[in-house]
Length: 334
Ligand code: ISE
Image (cartoon, rainbow, N blue to C red; front, side, top):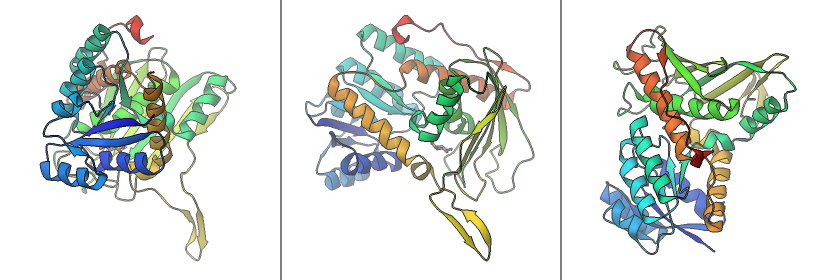
């Protein structure tokens, strides 16, 4: 069976997904697109020989669409995810599921009323080989209990539309989800430390910043967010446990030795750094859709991440520690 996918918002991320679905991934094909930018939707539809729908609502309802990928702007996700649930169609929604926890709660409520898990959130780092090896080692108990995790998330630059809160709910959200998954527990509080700002940033941004999170059992996670670091897309993570540490290795494919010394390449963006993770994530999703099953992060994961983001965004403007507020996890997501 070929899973016929409708894509909402085929911008940079969406087109990267289309390319992998049509080249390296088996079992799926993007047959329909819609976008607020009509010219872009028309061009992508022509390129994939698919149908352009005038609205996301029409795309979701179309008989030729078995499942939906949402790659549009975060604030536009809720209405389309709810329409997919109403239509009974599986949906892979790029992060953030929603920009606020309240919106994610509405999605959870609709999905529970529908009685079937249909929503997968695109938290791709869970599929990254290095993070998976790190999790397997920590879960084995060989290093004892995990006490702290030091993360860094650096981008060369960010686009003009990047607003002050996106440091948390668009960038740090990756570590928020990955650390929940890695540690297997929820966060209870957030604090933001605001160091000296780089002169190479837009004036409205606090860049860099350090998001400091604490889990239920007291594990402390610090996450350096530096989105105008200039030199590359640099993702670092070191977990400190009772008897040792484990870190992500450098992600270079080759090491150069010459008169300038020994060095390795640094990736430029997320599609480059997490290429393998994206392929595994989308392949597993297509396989699960074909079997009529759910896979990957759930709407609960989207909600939990949004709840931590809400506290993190508050901590950006307020001093001190902000509590994370979450509802109890429904049995549906156990
Ligand atoms: C972007 O949306 C991503 O998901 C990238 O992985 C992240 O590094 C970047 O900061 C975000 O804006």
